[in-house]
Image 1 (cartoon, rainbow, N blue to C red):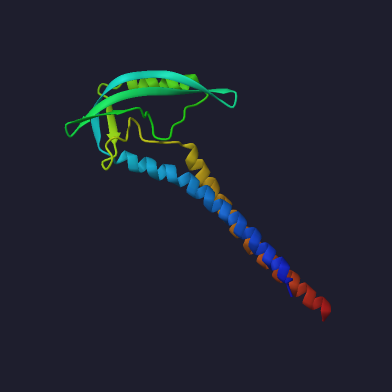
Image 2: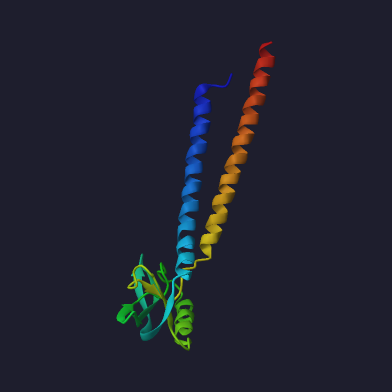
Length: 169
């Protein structure tokens, strides 16, 4: 009894929003997985060459970031690096970046993690953005909401069909 176009519309609606939820989940989990991978990279001592706070303007707002330069030796070859944290683009808070800078300067021995397959890729800290966990939870809740909505729609349509059938009898 349900209109075919209504059923197609509901399915299209659910598929669209489920695709959006999957995109949110993938977007949130990729950096987390990459950060965990970086945590497993081997680390070596490094010599700090520079550690200052720089800024750049993005959309008329100052973004501060810790600019680091360091060198490290691996297998007799010397490498240089400039990554404080993989994927970190800075923040609007100079004080937050100063905390990171002091954390680097306070290390008794600077240790950097390097990609075992590409030793020229290195970082001081693995990437971690706690906001991504919130996005992940939001994606899971969104998918749960859509599933509940779909179930309710099916029951509502079934109840409506039964009412129509009874009205016709």
